[in-house]
Structure formats: structure tokens, C-alpha cells
Length: 92
Image 1: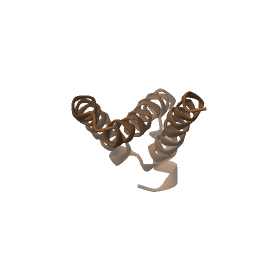
Image 2: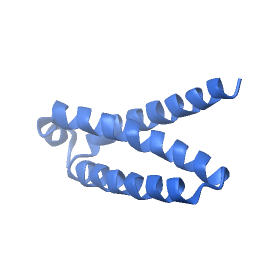
Image 3: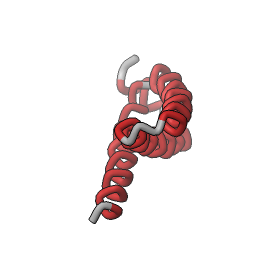
Image 4: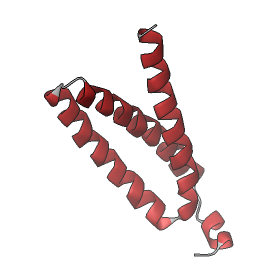
């Protein structure tokens, strides 16, 4: 797929959906890691299962158009940042 084909099939609504989904996914991943380190098996396992479901949705999106990797990466960054910042404030 070349860049003009990718741009012509790029949908802003899908991109926003991916952005939000990956804010949630990476927030969940950070939360998952915290739950594992705190040795909380039920919440860690549940979070991990939900996280992988959302990850699959993202993969299906960017396989169709590699430009969706942009909102995916941005959402990933935001999600992790927000959870770690929240945890940082709780531990002060």
C-alpha cells in the first residue's frame, strides 16, 4: 500500500477509535503490571484478558492501513503516562 492509497482510505473516526482504545489498552497494561507486582492474581488475569481483546481490535485496524499506527502509538503513550502519573500521585 503506497502513501496516497493509505491516505485515501484513512478514516478519522476509526483513527479516533484506535486512539481511545489504545489509551485504554496501555492504561490497562500499566494497571496489569501494577497488579502483577502486587501479587493480585484475579485483577491481573482479568485485566490481561481484556487488554489482549482490545489489542486484537487494534491489530485488525492497522493491518488494513499502516497510518493507523500513528493514533495507536499516541494512545499507547497517553494511556501509560496517565496511569503512571496517577500511581505517582497516590504514592506521594
